[in-house]
Image 1: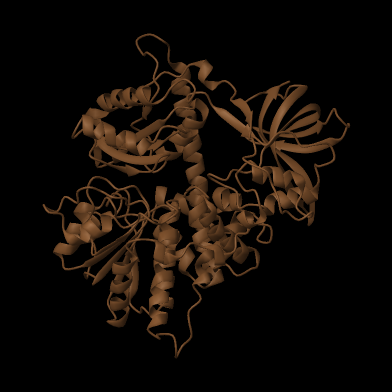
Image 2: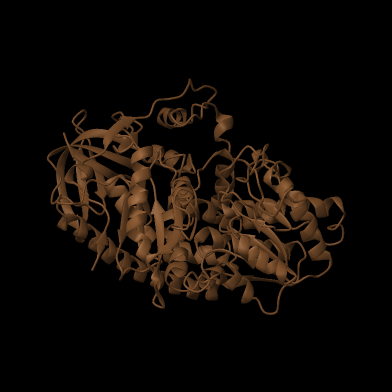
Length: 606
C-alpha cells in the first residue's frame, strides 16, 4: 500500500509567475562585436564589464587560498616519495566518479605508482567512507584519499585509523557539529566548527581544520574541483623541490574535461571560479582533446563535440554516468573515464547508455505512480502539507532523488522521496531530498535531528539536495516533522514558483549569430542561468512529435516573422492560438547545417 504524506491541490500546479531580470548596474567597456542582447543578459547576472566574462585559467583562485592544503600536500608528497599504496575512495554520483578519475590520473601524473580506487555500493556500503567500505579494503592501503565525501564519515575515518591507514578527506559537503579525525581535511565549506568531538580541549588537527577556510573566496567548488585544487598544490610543492627537473612538469590541464563534467553535473553554483574551470574543460572537449571516455559519452548522447556546451554535459553526459551509480556499479563509469583506449571507452559508454535508458524507464514509471497517487487523494483528513514526503515500498532507492526532483518542480515544495534501503532491509528507508529557493534542506534535516534525536539515522547534503536514512516505522513521525519545519521556514511568497526571464527579444534579433554568442557566452548553469526570453506569439502551425513533444511555428505579430520552435514533455493537448512563450534561442544542427531555433520552456495563453 503506497503511503503519501501530503496533499497536492490543483492550485499548486498552476503556472509560475513570470518576472524579468533587472541589470545590476551599467555595462561598459564591451566590444561592438558583443551583441547588445548578450550585454543585457550579462548585466542581469552582475557581469558588467568584459573582465568579468573572461574565463581564463590565469584568473583561477590560487590553490594556497584553500585552507587545509598544507597537511594534505605534505602527506601526499611523502606518499609519492615512499611509494605508498594509495586508495581513492570516491562516490557513486557523477561528481564522485569524475573526482575519482581526476585523483587517479592526477596522482599518477605526479609520480604515484600504486594508486587504486574504490567506489561504495550504495546498497551494500552506504554513502561515503563507511566502516563497511573500510573493512572491504584488502589488503589495507597505507593511505586513503576521499573524493566528494568524508566530512561526515566520523566512524569510517576512525575505522581506517584503527587499521593503521592514513586518511586525507577532500569534500565539499557541509560539515556537522563534529569533524572526522583525519590526518588532513580539505573542504571549502568547513568553517569555524566549534567542537571537534574528539575530547576537550579539541585536538590540534581538528582545531586547525575547523578554522582553515576563512579566506577562501569561493565555497562553490564541487568535489572534483576540490581534488583538482589539491593536485595543483601538490604539483606546486613538487616544483619548488625540483622534482620535475629531469622529466618535465606534468600537464594537469589535461584533467579539466573531467573537472568541467563533474562541476556541471553536480549542480553547484557556477560562480566565476567554477566558470573558469568549466570553460577550460569545455574548450578541451571542443578541440578534440578530451579523454576517450568523455568523447564516447558525448557521442553516445548524440551531442556535437565541436559545439558542446555546459547543458550537454548536464543533460546528456552526466546522467549516463549517474545511472551506473543508481542502478548498478559506478566502477563502470570510473573505468570509462580512466581508459585511454577509444574502443573500450565506446563499449563502456554504450553500456552506460543502456543502463541510463533503464533508469529513464524506471524513473518515468515511478513519477507517473507518484502523480497518480497525488491525483487520487481528497481533502478528508489530510490537511495541507508544505514539506512533502513520499514513500512507496516498491520504489528503487537509487532513483528516488529523481522522483523528488520532478515532484519539486511540479509542486514547488521541498520534497523527500523514500524507498526501502534494499530487499534485505525493508525496515530501513533511504530518502533523497530536493528543495526550492529559500529552504536549506540540509539545515532543515539538522534542525529535525536536534529536535527529535535518533529519528534520523544519517543525513548530509547541501542547501538544495540532501540524503538521509531512517527506520520505516519512523516515517510518519518524520513526515510530520519535515512538514512542520517547512511551515516555519517558508512563507507564501516562497511557495509561489517564479520563472525569471531576460525580457523580450526585439524583432530582427532571432538570428544564428546571436544564438552562437549566447551559447558561447557561458558557461551557463546553476547560479548563472541560461538566457531565457519571453515574447507574445501567434501559433501559425504546430504538430506532435512522438507522444509528448511539439514542433511549433510561431509568428511574431510585430513584424510577421515566423520562427521554428520545439517544446518537449508537454502536458497540454494543444498550444493556444495566441501565447506568451518563455524560450531559449538555440542552434539546431541538421545534416551539417545550422539554424536558429526556439527551445520553449513554458507557454501560457495570451
